[in-house]
Length: 292
Ligand code: PMM
Image (cartoon, rainbow, N blue to C red; front, side, top):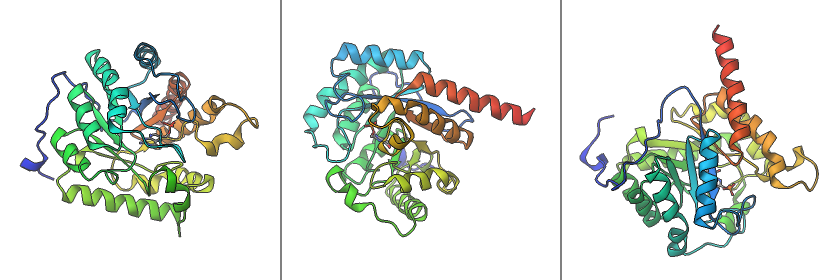
């Protein structure tokens, strides 16, 4: 599809924005850095700028291709934070990392935060609502020209559990994502900048999550890069010791990352980058072995 004027990026960061490839045969690792007091697995740990920067540097050294920075928890039942507070949490970090040449995705449902993060040097906009929570997000995506993660979403934390009802979760999620993507394209978003994400755990129970992972190729058949974000999520709890801390789910998360990579996922969003790196190296070696 040809670019139109509406699709041409008009906003440039004063910082050289590190670029993130959307094509290629290597699955990228998106390392999670939540600067929130209440995220379910790492809440409260990275609120101080120095500690957050150090953690981001460590994730990068371990093999993260980009760092996903979020200032608002999206776990079920989480309270919304003000946009000002969200920006106070994320912008200094985005600015410092981009300045250091580290690619950042900003995990936000707020258009003004996405725009400010783009000015600060963010490389990707990751919106768990896929642009549904804030009507201005589409304009910001068009104006910044940044890659846009469109996650399957049916509502904010307070209402998402009640909306976990599907006739056929795989077909329904695929159709709803396809519709959302079509709407964004009609409004002027460059299709080459769209990434889709099934939204593991968002208005989905464990059975729904496993069906979506097991039918990964149905989602991939949309023809867009796919982000798989299952790391440490609640549906993995039955696979580890009862009552174990969320980081006990890192091994199952890494296995999911390797399977997703072997199916051609664009990226995996994970907490434990070192273990994921090793899992993806195995998937790569396996693929090379298949070609030899
Ligand atoms: N999950 C969380 C936050 N951001 N972004 C995308 N694209 N996909 C997700 O599934 C997703 C996300 C919640 O998990 P966390 O508390 O571990 O960050």
